[in-house]
Image 1 (spheres, rainbow, N blue to C red):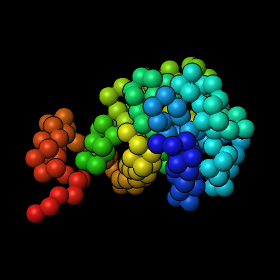
Image 2: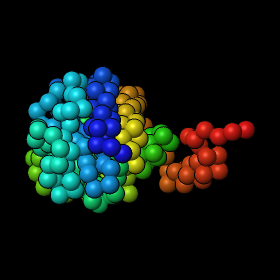
Image 3: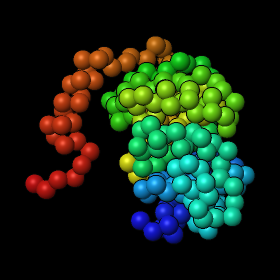
Length: 215
């Protein structure tokens, strides 16, 4: 993918997340990888207004390849996901419901089968100061076997093979947190058992669930 297209993609999804209410002001960051290069939102910019030419391109060591603005303060977090999980894109938000759940729970239970897209239960990484290697390490550990993690007293992170997938997972995580909150106001939410989650995986494989197919 050409760098211009990669930067356009990052800017577009950043604006989408702002329009969806997933990020507020300058809080949150988005990146996408093409080979050894990563396009990433810069620090201190309103994601609702970001343009492709403002997106910074770096290599996997964090060196700036293209752009005039410093990359997000969560650079270590994004690069860590690319190195450990070979992801194609990373989305970090301060979405209100995901952040609220991170204040209370140690993990978001698997209360709906759609959360299996994120790996089932979603762990809450312990609080660490933003923009530090310690935060990156905590979140990377919470992501083990998952495509999403909550960050205590901070926000949420999702990753995927591409930026569209990572963005959809961020929206799904916020939906799951909202669903849990609404159910918890009524009583103790039921959660899917390990056996039920295994049956779900088998049914997805059997029906090619979530993918269009010809009759």
